[in-house]
Length: 541
Image (cartoon, helix red, strand yellow):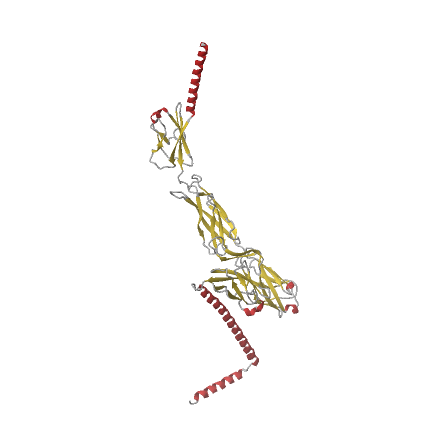
């Protein structure tokens, strides 16, 4: 029995010490966590108080061993903990380097961790990954096509207002009427893509310089930076070659092959030497097989030479038609409307095969070849017209309608369905119908006009539609159009009168030479005239 009591006492003592050890172990491993906040790059003055530690016995602070970041670990010497539990900052901390500092207070039974959270301030502007973006695009690039994507980043706290930024276009140089650039950036995205509305025109600008800004959303201060986008434009074929009207003659032997007959000159507004400027000629006509036409690479002229000898009957009166087009396919772009939202209303065409034709007459009375009446396709009499909103149609007419007769054919180009149409496609004057969907503003239309000889021209027509009750612009434009037609008519009349006068003078000269009066007769007539004059002056009243 005594032995049993002794065993029980020993077991009780062991259990007691075991429980005490477990309690001490739990105290040793326990963490009493406290959190304080410190603003990054604080300007001081130092030291300044961050807060007090939540410790029951602050009077026993000397029992703790204080160590960790800001004390004896980097960044060293930044944090100080006083004996009363107050925590002080002794210097600056950079958020980008340290997001949080952990200070530990430990003793034999306690291990306290204090987190000092570094609060981000807006001390970084968003920065683009390139100072300059430079790209090259074709003049024929359609609106809405991606041009370039810019990228910027911000080193401030991710997801905070300080790190979020907005991209915008600050300026565009030069400013052109037919093009508007814009940038598209999704919410919270680091990139933005630049597009344009309207039509590019190499003749207006060969290069655009676009300044793009990135500005963050900082609450106290907003920081920003910029990048430059350089947009180089490559000239493409938006101008057809046009023949220069002329009459000329040259002396050749029409019975000899290889002899040059004539040079046809064209003008082209595209870049000289480019594929959009270089001309390609072809000949049509009953006797076209006797000739060939080649392009002079320096002048772009079409040089006609004889390939098969011609006899007198074949060469006395020939009619040939020359067609010219460029090496590069033709394109056009016309703006018909500028809505507030979305892309503009644009008529465009890419990769079309378009040409200009001219016909001329070759006569060869002997060994001389005379090229006469080089004529290009029909032209519009007025390039600008005005219409009131209340009006439903207007007339368009070709220049010198008597030259073409009723065989002129008009065709509206581009997507104009539901807005514009022609009442009839044939005639020297046709009626342009305005549908109800057309709104006030400037509308640029493209007309393809051809005649029975196969001569074709593309003509631009600007129609200004406005409310005539409140604006006089349409009336002014209409009077201008009428004046243009009047000037054309007057010019034609004057030219006819001059031609008639020349024919009369020529007939008079021929008749005068045919009479061949003698010198004596001339003097005799003069003497008779003097005598008559003398007798008239001596008579009385």
